[in-house]
Length: 64
Image 1: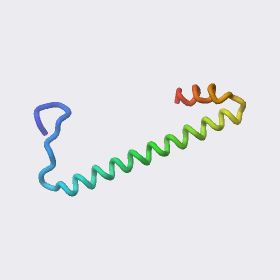
Image 2: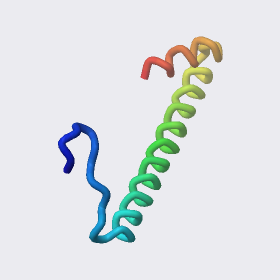
Image 3: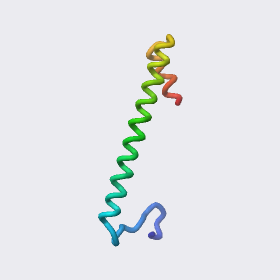
């Protein structure tokens, strides 16, 4: 690690392994984002089905 906070030395020993880990992290992040989007849309649709207007439902989902 370097002396600067938030800065790390480049992985020099095993670059392919570091790249693999980075790809896995990005893939996991994309999965989480997709799951969150699906959940929020489901909640939005549930609000609308219960009689809220789309505008009201959107505001309620924004608070999550």
